[in-house]
Image (tube, rainbow, N blue to C red; front, top):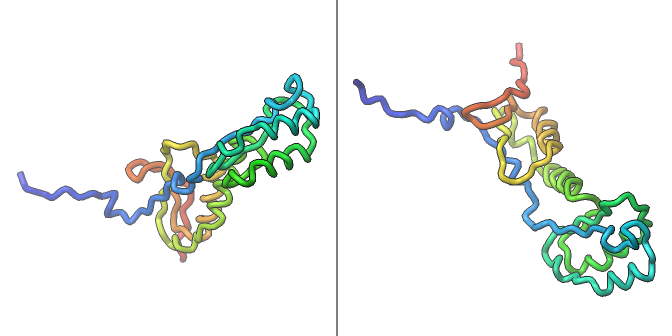
Amino acid sequence: MTDTPLVNRVAASGLITINLEDFYPPEALAVFDMKDYLFMELILKEKDFREALNEHDWPQYEGKNLAVFCSTDAIIPVWAFMLVAACAAPFATDIYQGTPDEFYKTAFQKRLAALDASQYADQRIVIKGCSSKPVPPSAYVELTRKLQPYARSIMYGEPCSTVPIFKRPKPQ
């Protein structure tokens, strides 16, 4: 038997792996559900709402992103969201009007917008599939859209087991 050295074919393949977890917002996400401040979780009474906001523990949002939404089917006036934002602004890193899922979609969109996709020109890219953090499908769509004009190929998964997504035709 010959002593053939082990070769890591994945490392030698020249594949570049992009992990969308790297674009995950670094700050924790807190939520402010308006339903908790409504009469019968349905009706906003301005005086009661303002009193509740004055008594609320706003410093708990220090250094966090804040998603402000209403989980019930109540009609919330726009000024109520504005009032919550004004109260939270001295503490929260970012304030978003929408559900946590909507926040993450928007946060990934913002971070991916700053990506210079031209650095991946003529490269073979693997967009990592498994993650320990929730990455919305919209982030995979946006990254594919940004990379396609530049990349030689785009794959999904892990370098040892990928699903082909896009391959640039060879020039003739």
